[in-house]
Length: 207
Image (cartoon, rainbow, N blue to C red; front, side, top):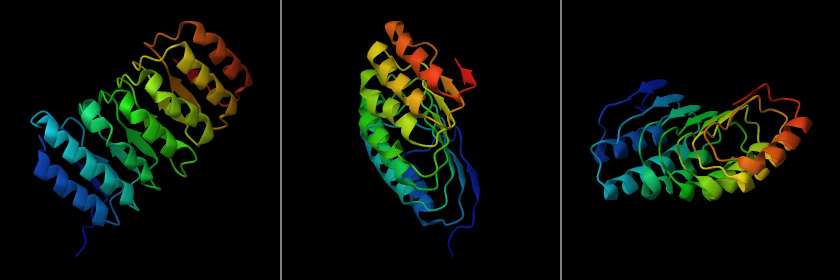
């Protein structure tokens, strides 16, 4: 019989490669799993294993037809693993994705942004402490082209050029209510953000 789980919490469980592969199989085959928390689980993984785990797990989530909430926060995938994570957003039912403090770097930006644009379900996206910088341009631009209501981009090395892209997204978005841009060197990009906010009618909370 297929697994009938609806919620699975495995935070801080020291999952190793074989565990991530098994978890990927569960996610891929279950038609009832809606919420998965697997935060803080990479402490014992070698770099080569990070790549394999990220690829297997992200592709499995992308195939899920039931998952709505996924927490992978505090898993330090870094650049080598982070570049394999964008297929997470191939999951059409996913509404909440937490990649907070994963240190993915800019490599995650293009793939994540292209999938975020027009995503049918995504509402809550936590990407703080990932240091995407200019490499996250596709993500910043896509925020205005989907139904996101909450986004956290603090500590992402967002400069004035990236802030310009975010300003454009703010002007377009009709759904975003909360945006966290704290601890970013925005500098002159604040002008574009201000213009975007002047047009936006949905944002009620900006940090």
